Length: 352
Ligand SMILES: [Zn+2]
Image 1 (cartoon, rainbow, N blue to C red):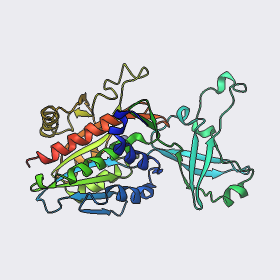
Image 2: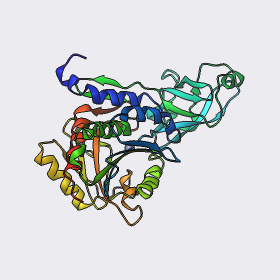
Image 3: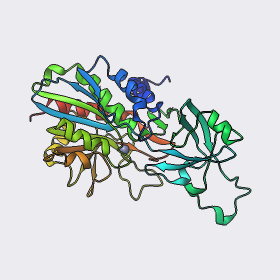
């Protein structure tokens, strides 16, 4: 791409592209472990993975207080439930899906013999009767281009194989990226980029250790975050996820916009001190940001981390995302860049 503005964020796009190219359906996050490690290598002081594949990196591990940045690495997907005699795969969703959005998509089946391509078959409009227009997962199958169950099994397919939407992330317009799993690879890429920037300012951290975690199993109940909140015992946590951006379809219910900056959540589960200092730091450094009121807060890892052990002072910062939980989720690289800047300035100015 030739535009100057895009070149500006080429490095953050490169991180996102690498993360998004690895399918990490909930339960199969270990697929991204090496990629995450490589992306952080040379920037952090230590890196390890836990029993359930949360990936943990730390800068300045000798600090007395612990600041945690976490973004989930898992993405919604499917699992093979049976293979019929003609070689079609029946499947069930993992995470929050709308069957209409999955219909007609290309998928990757992660088999015992490697990844194979398939499609979620459709009924041609010519043949669809009015009463059939409601689409339900129970009626959908994945076609992997074989003619029999035997052939599917020979290709390596087994009941229990994970399936991801197939999508290579793509640049669109000057600053935006489309693809599946931007929830929450966009957040994860932002914290990895923040780690890279923070590595050059380590001497400003004083007594603060900064942990960067790619959490697992967010999409089925914040399970990785529950483990990490206990294990790392952070003093402060800032969770990084995506939030619904305004589009013609969501304008009555979503209020933040793509390209207008990271979104700071305000609501009961987000600690006042954290929220206020995130806002103060954004303003002090001229970092564009948006405010979002969140009266309930149940949808992200912040929900689990907040109540880990005796309670963790928790905040939430999000990347605006259009068309969430589809194969065409859209995010803006400028929001990710500004989010990373915010985390870095927050880390170096932190007093706990
Ligand atoms: Zn998410």
